[in-house]
Amino acid sequence: MVDRELGYVGYFDRESCDLDEFKVLTSQNLTGAHVPHAADIVKNVPVYDMDALRPSLDDPAKRRALLAEWGHVFRFSAGVIALKRAYEDTSVIDRASKVFDAIIADEKASAAGKGDHFATAGANDRVWNSLQKQCLRDPEGFARYFGNTSLAAAAEAWLGPNYQMTAQVNQVRPGGKAQSAHRDYHLGFQTADECMRYPAHAHEVTATLTLQGAVFHVDTPVESGPTKLLPFSQAYGPGYVAFHDDAFRAYFEEAHVQVALEKGDAVFFNPGLFHAAGENRSADINRMVNLLQVSSPFGRALEAVDRKSMSLALFPELVRLKQGGALSAAELDAAISACAEGYPFPTNLDTDPPIGGLAPPSMADLMRKALEDGATAEKFAGTLADQAQRQAA
Image (cartoon, rainbow, N blue to C red; front, side, top):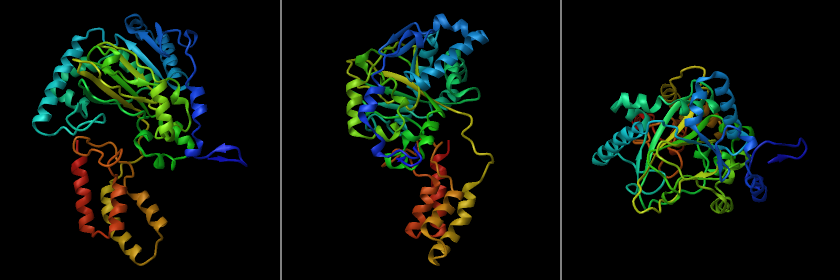
């Protein structure tokens, strides 16, 4: 939505999405002059040989120059980097794979597994919060796995120091189907209508708050379905609305690229990059990847607030004020927004999975629904208690 008089974009809507403009943007070609540290460029994806570059990470000036290059790629250029031999010793990968296999087996036996984003439950294997589960089960192996200067450098290149790591293992067996094109957390987990409620500048900011990554636990030729990528697509302003559009998704299927990778390699990309897991068309490759989602340290409120207690105290008053007509619907909604937690993450996705949408309901969603349904204060208290139990790590 462009303010014609003032000449700026205040909000993105469906009319903001121009497929021809998107095609021009994503038809660029990356050249070596833009990525001088890269050993190769494969299908517009700069590939960095970490065996050659690892010593540079110990030199402050050389490290800073490399990280500046990666940051530029993430924001303005291809949007994605591939790190060959991110792990010098792949026995560390094998050790972690055994831990993840054991976790998968245990969760299947206990019926804790909730499926994944790729297919119906049981078609593939997903380990939510593999970071915590690996650390608690094998802390030494965790130290060796995440004591990796290549991964740390990529995270810092986009987020700076003090970032927060999260991880989710995904194992896609032969026959596992592809995803549809999408962007990722935060706005990537919202519907198109929800995205359109956020001002245009928030669409740009959201992509700077996280970095997507993947560590490859097996050799991953193209037939096994490595991530489908559309270089340069992260630079498209209304992309968080556009990726929901069928025409944009169809173009992605025509224009995407896939890069074969090996055990111990890693990729990192801007969460705004249009991407999707590929179909595993191999006969015998269980494609295990540890998906990393690294968060900025700055996504925090100033004060620690007990919003559950506040919501329990406020709800009966909202009921009274609604019944008496003292507050309009918009005023009630504003009061809820000031009190309840409006964002459903972080949560425990094993016990609080998205059902019927891209994200589970937030505390504010539950409060609005309880008010709409005429729930009693006791019933609302039970609803919040159930949510807290689901969200518990």
